[in-house]
Length: 151
Image (cartoon, rainbow, N blue to C red; front, side):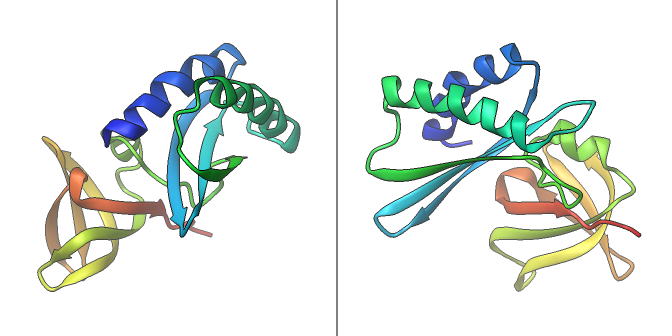
């Protein structure tokens, strides 16, 4: 996690937890001069629009006072949803046995995009099985990973 994301987590997480939610993760998406900070929250009972609005109001106040993000940005608070993104090793280990869609920061074995079965965790790496082939992918090299909903 970058230093900027660590600072954001330290600022945001206590407030999210105090409101009764879990900070699932967040993304900082740069779009030219304008950026978006997307915060994912979760709770055992699920998340609705009112929950997102409550967290958005609280986090907005904190970010206005602390001002950790330079330039313009939009704040979005969301549920992780069925195709939930994964951010931490703990989250990956909770979804062993599920199919993941992921994108790496740099190519591995000539490719950046993978879709396969998460079969385990080894140290700081995830074990992904794609077409009967096993890949050991370092979590630090994963740009984005999502659960593929099974219907």
